[in-house]
Length: 151
Image (tube, rainbow, N blue to C red; front, top):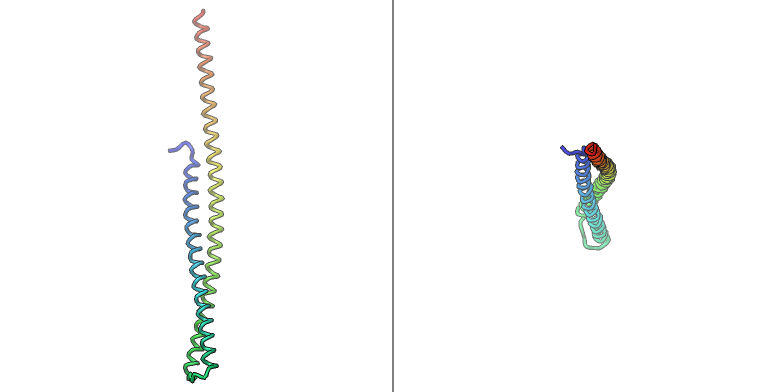
């Protein structure tokens, strides 16, 4: 076992930060994908609306039931867009939570690292004091031995 018990917690904190960072990156990837999907849906809906307006205003002789089908399809595309916007909002909230968790995990890691460093410094200082004390005792002991040898 290590002389610094904080090192284990420091490793755990590093692991936690790594895992949280992966989750935040995954949420960012999902948000970007959902945003691209939303843009594609909106672009498709605009194109469909423009085409259906052209069909309705032009004298192409487009039958009423076809126009009705186009209008229903437009309604469906709009409903998909609304659902996608809701999904995107949820993903944005989840991403915000993941980023907040990452920030919290990083703060925890920094605190643990500071405590581990402080503990390590304390151990080094204690070892240095002990070494100085032993050296002093050896010096005193050898001078006492020399003093005894002179008698």
